[in-house]
Figure 1 (cartoon, rainbow, N blue to C red):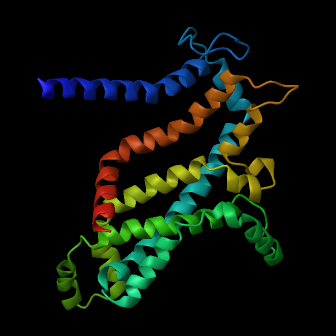
Figure 2 (figure 1 turned 90 degrees about the vertical axis):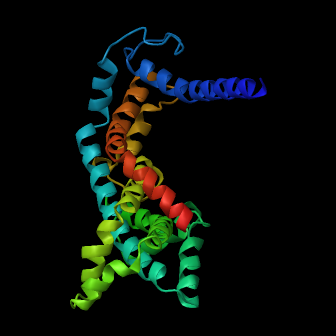
Length: 275
């Protein structure tokens, strides 16, 4: 009897947790389907099915240009992070010495200090070095902040890959880079997908670094252009348009996660357990 009661309580808790999680999403989608001038309560779910707010958001945020800016920044940053972090994890996961353990801890220590804490001195350094404020400038911060976690994930997964699989290639005369890119790196696909999803979502959604390091409106990313819909005292926010912009920004991430979710779970589990 007690087991049945516990099962009922667990199911009730899960249902409440699910409702609490999905309720804000339902409200956002429902509000985005209302006309821009609608002032009805957001709790009136799906009372309208108008795409006028989406058209307004698409035009005002210059979606095509902002989408390309976000895409260039995200893909470029993630590509560099995957290459650098996987190459760094190769010796960290293969060599068992005090130096490798020290370097591993050094990489992990980068997770302790948020990049936002040092953004002022970094901005001053960029200014002294003459680095221009373009769409590519935030990539420096994105890459730097993403490498510690990515190296941690890759190193944990690297330790689960047997070294014996490289022996035949080594006996055939394959050099270090050939063994890594032809044999080891393809086996790191689950970890690579995990890095792409975790860091790609963060880079895509981040508005802080583009807001600080990008000056031209034409080079702003999607999250920054969404700030234009917040409004002020004289021009109140049109919540239907704001939520429509949020949905437009989230659609690429939803598609990406849907396609790669089975690899994501495996990479996160292996990297965290083996690390």
